[in-house]
Length: 528
Image 1 (cartoon, rainbow, N blue to C red):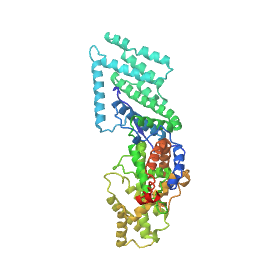
Image 2 (cartoon, rainbow, N blue to C red):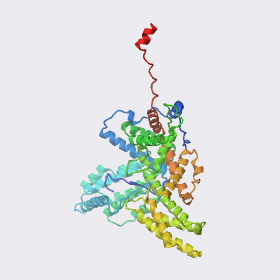
Image 3 (cartoon, rainbow, N blue to C red):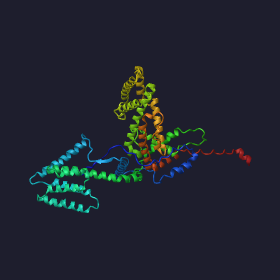
Image 4 (cartoon, helix red, strand yellow):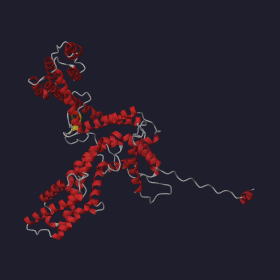
């Protein structure tokens, strides 16, 4: 539309597609003693570029507004590149503002005011062409922006027909052929547009509306054409970004780090907490005095990656190296939480009821679908899990009684229904044994995928007790491992430098040798 600062807004449709980057994860390192540190240092630092540094080694720096804005633009470009790479359905649309939003109301009012002024000026006697000339000038710039660098002939023609100086002279003499200029603009748009817009161009040519309405429609189609150009550019860029995405994202993040030395603060804290977790569970038996076991660098990193799967977003921000994937990570986490809850409820049902419902795959599928639907949206702030589980319990009892009756089994007794309801509702407690069991085995499953260099072969190998959600786990596992491997490929050098500093800063130096006893005066005299 006529506002110069308006831009098409980006949207992403369809499911996010996993990155095509091949799995490059390493097997979890075993715990190594301090005597192994030289070997660990050599193998780990071989992939670390000297230009990457952690913020702790950088002196404080005062940032200018320009540097802050430049870093923000770099981060925006980084997020956009990641979205284009991982989401094959990513595209831009011309208008995605909510119908009742304040921004849409303001924009619509400004546009209406513009068109009302234009209509008022053209209806004057003699007509005023101030708004019309500004409109034609903007249309000319849009048309020129569609041209390829070598389209000199069409560029010259547009500049000649939409010669603003000539049009202003014609306006002074009331000799502007607005209708003729509109016809030329529509013809030129027809030569430039994608085939999908041919019908829109045809409608413009056949339009019998007044000149103001016609120009309004011209701008609407120009907006569609602008989105088409952007989407074409995205499609052209995607293969290039997929081939060079790792290098591009790493270089872009390095430029952010150069301008903002503290840009890895949360990443350092995230890795440090993983290291501290491993150190806390390190066995100390059998070690000589002054010797200390430290985890291998890949073990630290894989433990940190697993923490991302259960990140508490309300308590702390994501590490900076994961910010571009926050939406995808949240979606994986929400789906995984619901899958775990479904599995927990099913385990309770089958352990409580037992034989009469064993081996009935159709009943299991019905229960699974029903529980999943009733727990949909459980990650929402307004979702009451206890109330939802009460509803789940009631529906389950009805479904079980129906199934039992159909197969000539007695219905569930009131006492058994109360027991079942109580056990299902108790999974809201963090120390619930069924909940703890399911969560531990889900973590084992994802850790095995993260540590394996070929995780695709293990997607279907779910731990015992998780078979009910095996398809969902395999899908979520593939998505998460794809994100992890791509993240590792991009930010590996940064992680390497952070872990190296953290590991060696946690190694206490050996205690100093005991000082030899001082000779006494008597010993000295005796020796003399």
